[in-house]
Amino acid sequence: MAFIPYGRQNIDQQDVDAVVECLTSDYLTQGPKVPQFESLVKEYCTVAYAVAVNSATSALHVACLALGVGKGDHVWTSPITFVATSNVALFCGATVDFVDIDIQTYNMCMLQLEEKLKIAAQRNELPKVVIPVHMGGQSCDMAKLALLADKYGFRVIEDASHAVGASYNDLKVGGCQYSNICIFSFHPVKIITTGEGGMAVTNDQNLSRAMKLYRSHGITKDDRQIQKEDPEAWFYEQQKLGYNYRMTDIAAALGCSQMKQLDAFVNRRRELVRRYSEHLSNLPLSLPTERPEIRSSYHLYIVKLEIKKPTRREVFDALRAADIGVNVHYIPVYRQPYYQALGFDKGYCKDAEAYYSQCITLPLYPDLSIEEQDYVISTLEAVVLN
Ligand SMILES: *Cc1c(COP(=O)(O)O)cnc(C)c1O
Image (cartoon, rainbow, N blue to C red):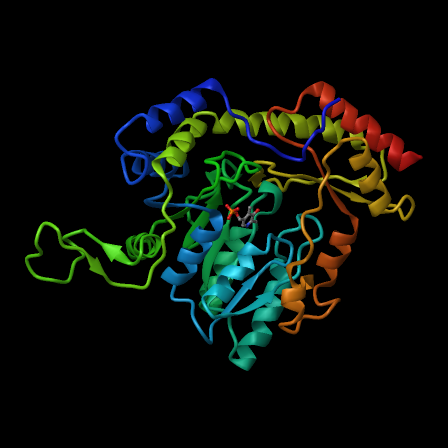
């Protein structure tokens, strides 16, 4: 059997045709496809504004900038995430801190967040922004987070890189009912792809405007926003120090086409998850759980090894040797040398470190065949019970 990765894109002929059509059209960038893709995502999520960018990292960055994150500010996130989530706060000159995870969902723990907020309030070090991460596609407890945001006066950016197509309380993630901004990733391993790409969605017009400025050099050509009276037809204005974070029309054309398949992708992932859970339930593993108010998009299928022997490393290496592309999501961010140098010690978030010592991500993507999945299941069983 050929190598089975932990995740991969699903590209069909319609996707290929959509990209080729864009390539032979008048615009490769800054044409009609980016606004079209933004509209599709807005409608899907029931949200007022969408800002497409060239990665989720860029989306997180413009979101932080739009919320005014800068020197002297504190930004809190989960240690169990990709480094980009916390790096963006450092881009802005802010101080990053980490809130330990919930041992069931692997999302930021709301009880530990509340405790940390109480202490921070006494020290006058409350965060300006908290960035929850919807780990594996399961939304955080957003209603609780919104209550805390209200009480302690911080803003919320959802890192929904894993959760395109997921729901919370029967609302699509991205509706921003409980957050200021929500961001998505369209990297090929995520739920839908644009090659590289990301998007920030919000119901706040001012935040949307600011993020649009930051994605394109801080420049506007919109007469309604230009400060100069009676601007000439060629006129544009740089109002902020922005970046070139634009998405191309080629990427957006792929995104528009992928949106048509989003629900089918999530359904297929969920079907495969059901099969995994059914066949792995007798092994000494903790399987993913889904809270009743959640419908996960299942970007990742993460199991935790509940025995000491074989070790996680032995299980991981044996699966890789069998051409199964298992992975580990994630090394706690603050364990990285860069973050150690900022002063974070081992043991800082005990639940995150315990989780990290046991977790393994199994292959999961819409194109994974039943035959391949059965091979993963039987190999894992043989390795774990050996
Ligand atoms: C993938 C990912 C990112 C970064 O996404 P890019 O589109 O590659 O920039 C950020 N946060 C999380 C949780 C991710 O999984």
